[in-house]
Length: 209
Image (cartoon, rainbow, N blue to C red):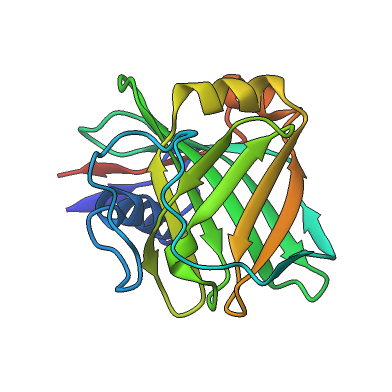
């Protein structure tokens, strides 16, 4: 079997890394961390708040996070529909990853998924809360943790996507191990244009047998 790289291909290792993240998304919602409470209804994350079973001790803002522009990456593999993710990343001054948000959409599907990569050491039962311009709160459970990141993900409520397309700021809140709320704000004013526009990169793998 020979492998032929098309002009749009960015290398098998890059593709493998990218697809491994998407694979995490597919099975992650079914395998949760031991601390994560499973959602029984399977409905998109929405404004409905779960009962809070812990007492917050205070709040603080996450400082010195620098955010990238929104970017769109698409992935083509033989025999499957194109999968695209519209993403933004934030890093600390040290260069360490602080947060990444992806909206994952598969060609032909009516649903989309939102996933967030966050640092380890957070209070997992609290999940992640997102609001757009101080509007409705949307909550996402943690579904998987690796050695250097934890992933929160769920179906994205269409209302949330609409708010992201028309809003200016996304407020993300987590709870740390000291049971303090930690928040950060990131821009969404370019989200709609990037999501609906031409991909920043397309990863493609063609295999001839």
